[in-house]
Length: 158
Image (cartoon, rainbow, N blue to C red; front, side):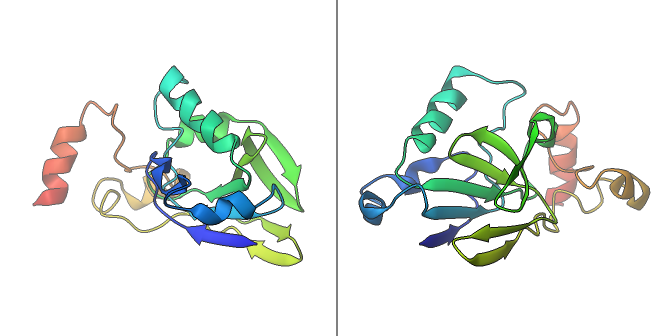
């Protein structure tokens, strides 16, 4: 089985047994795909809270796959080693928590899945030049460690 959701923003509560009871019948060959804004590699560096959440997700009966959205810590994500998995390239966060890299096609139980990734965002509009965005598609995305974060937030909200 393949289940699709999106935008968990670092909060895996929707995968509790109460919210997602079918998981008791799932196996590692069943996939939950998060379409953008996974957000569980958000901190500047690895920490205990993040590890606990990722380990908890890794311990589920199913395999969690995610495609990056516009709210990710791309420095951390892109620093992970690249592996080949089910026909495409991935970043292995945990054995059963896997980032499907953009532009890759995967074979999931006979179903072809294309990882498109990204999105237009109010976070980017006006916060990076076209030239900056051509060099780095994540330029201008609001990052919580950005010293200009509050100024950018003010600009976005106006």
